[in-house]
Image (cartoon, rainbow, N blue to C red; front, side, top):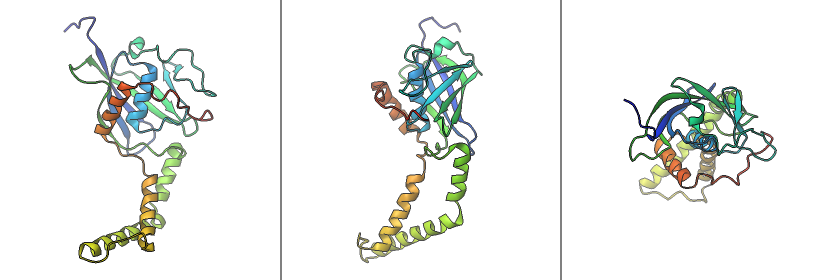
Length: 233
């Protein structure tokens, strides 16, 4: 089938975070007219990063990205460079780096190039797995060390005891006993332990939430223009 010149094309991308097991990945569909600046926001949203650090794309050996004070300078305006300009073929890939301290590297594969689906809003995330590591955890090596420390018995035993205490208080209340209150020091300490654990946990992948965030990006694609990642990393 020969497509008309005016037929909108969609790139089907697979984004894979390097050196993380189990693998963290997303599949997103973006318009060929998507700019480098917009793709940066799309990747941040899809992966669950906080856009708090510097970044760069490496495409055919050349760096692209959005400039921030004190950070990298790029030869091209990211609002003018569109994905279609690279004339990619299916099977090609490029790289996206985020946080030059932790140095998270993402491989981005061109899996398909197809006509847009009528009435579908782009960008669109249709698959994915895994949560990105927490920011500022030291990159892949630091993240693995953090996981080992967090999953050690020294950490898990107090967490298990805290969960058991909370469960006992709730069961007692359900059976007609007193309601747990802020005056119960043991109960509040157990809740604090769970809060500390939850604060460390990365945000789990939620395809619906990603697509809702994509829709918000579409309504206000430059909402983060006044946000400046730290220039040191």
